Length: 177
Image 1 (cartoon, one colour):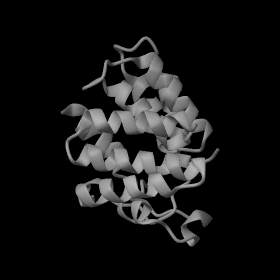
Image 2 (cartoon, one colour; image 1 turned 180 degrees about the horizontal axis):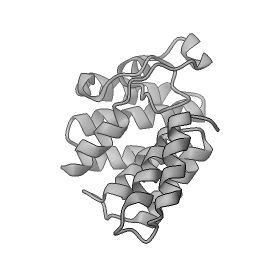
Image 3 (cartoon, helix red, strand yellow; image 1 turned 120 degrees about the vertical axis):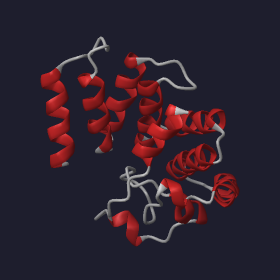
Image 4 (cartoon, one colour; image 1 turned 90 degrees about the vertical axis):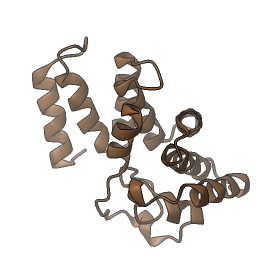
């Protein structure tokens, strides 16, 4: 349950973006489930609590089948995972996040990194979390810096480093890459 709550809190973000991707028309999967943390999103972000799970799941499955570009498929899998998570299907959500990451999609890495960071419904694995979050950060997922800060702030983690935690938090707050 904690996984659902924390992933939701990290995936809920609704800050507006200046991304030129927002100038392009989005699919219904995009319109129903865009993630604010995703720098490649195609529509305005949808808050987690506003997700209409069944509609999003159906729309994303349709869009996945018709997508011709790998990046689009990856984004749809990420958003499918959000719908599944909202619907209470954490196993399905993890499978969808894994599929998104298999396309080297930065926000897919972010979703997996957060899941391994929290360790609910999947084994907690700080090494996996750090690896996925660094890949997400490299792909300009700003929110990965905040998750990395949390990882390095945790005294129980082998990666505990208060200075590095502060550096990641500053990076997140400055949002400069």
